[in-house]
Length: 228
Image (cartoon, helix red, strand yellow):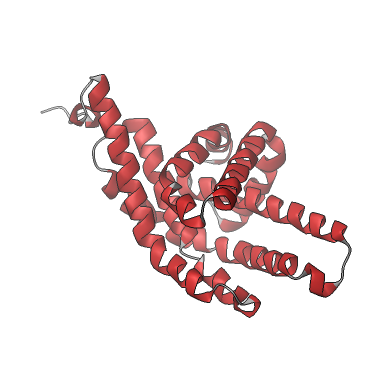
C-alpha cells in the first residue's frame, strides 16, 4: 500500500519555497475574503452619510464574520499541515462554519450598531461625556467577546450557548490573549483612522492569521477541557 502523500512536499524544504507558499496563502485568502465581503461592504458606501441608515449599514456587515471565520479555518490548516490548497480549505471552513457563526454574530452586530448610533448622536441626546466613554468600553467588550467567539466557532464544534459562555469566560481566564486581541483591535482602528476602511479590508488575511496565533492558548485550553 502506497503511503499517503505529505502535503508539505508540495511546497518543498527550501527557504524561498516556504516563503513563496506563505505569500501565496496570504494572497489567496485575501482575495477570497474580499470576494465574499466586498458586495455587502460596497453597500455601506452607498448608505453612509445618513444616521437613519444605521440598521441597514449594520445589516451589511453580516457576511463579514463568516468570511473571517473561513479565513481563520484555512490559517489553522496552514499552521498544522500546510499545502498549496488555501482556496479549498477556505471554502471548506466557510461551508462548515457559516451557520454556527450566524447564530451569534447578528445579535452582537445589533448591539454594536445601537452603540455606534448612540455614540454618533451623543450631542443631540445631550447626555454627559462620561456616558460616551462607558459606551466605548461596552463596545470594546463586545468586540473582544466577538473575536473570541469567532476563533472558537472557526476551530471547534460547540453548541451556541456553550460558545457564548466560553467566549466570555476566556476574556477573564486568559488576560494575555484578551490584551493581545485588544491590541489587534486598536491597530485595526488606527488603520481605519489613518488610512481607510478599505485598507483594513485588504489586510484581512494577515490580521486573521495574527488573531489565530494570538488565540492559540485559548484554543489549546478549550480543546483539552471542553471537547472530546
